[in-house]
Each structure stands twice: as C-alpha cells, then as structure tokens.
Image (tube, rainbow, N blue to C red; front, side, top):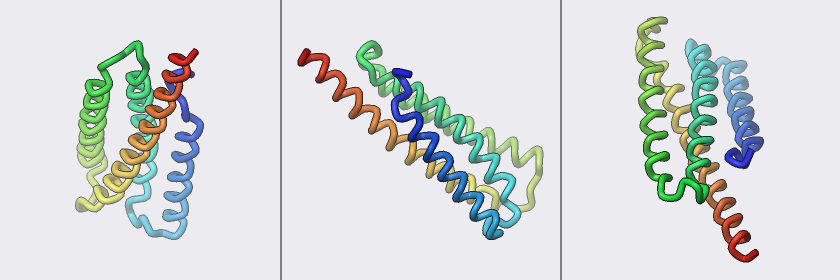
Length: 136
C-alpha cells in the first residue's frame, strides 16, 4: 500500500464524520435531509478515497512533476462529479426546496479539508522517505 499511507487514519476520520452525522440525525437536527446527508457521506467518502490515492501516487519520484496535473484534475473531477450528484439527486427525488444543498456543501467542504490535510501528511512522509534514501 505504498500509495495509500495514512489510509487507516483516513478511514477513521470518515467514521468520525459518520458518527457525527448519526448523532445529528438521532437528535433530529438534520430534519428532512437525513437521507441526502448519509448518501452524500458515502459518495464523498468513495470520491475522496479515489482522489487521495491518485494524488498520493503523484507525489512519488516516479511521477515527478505531475502533482499539479493530478491535483487539479482530481479537484475538477471531484467538483464535476459532486455537481452531477446534486443535479441527479434533485431530478430523481425532487426534494422540496433547495435546503438539501446545505448539508451537502457542509460535507463537501469537510471532505476537501480532510483530503488536503491528508495530502499534506503524505507529502511530508514522501519527502522524509526521499531524504532517507538520499542519505543511504
């Protein structure tokens, strides 16, 4: 799992987010948006794992200079698929109003912060590994 360092930590963060959502749902603070919140969590967990894998892979020396391409491509893909997700949800389930966007974007922002934080951890890990290889 060379390209997925910190994957266990990432899954732990996903579970903490899920637990938080579950608590909000049990306290009935999500109102009519419980279903979209859980579906969004699942969708963004899968998408963030994919982009984490691709972005982490781009940090290693064998893909030198491609990080910006991978990161930008992953960000655009994340945004486009998320936009498509919102449109498909709106068209298929036809929820009343546009309030479902609030929990979606709250989770979207949370997952982007998590993704970037873990990407920075991976970058430090790779940089440290490369220095150790140069010394030996």
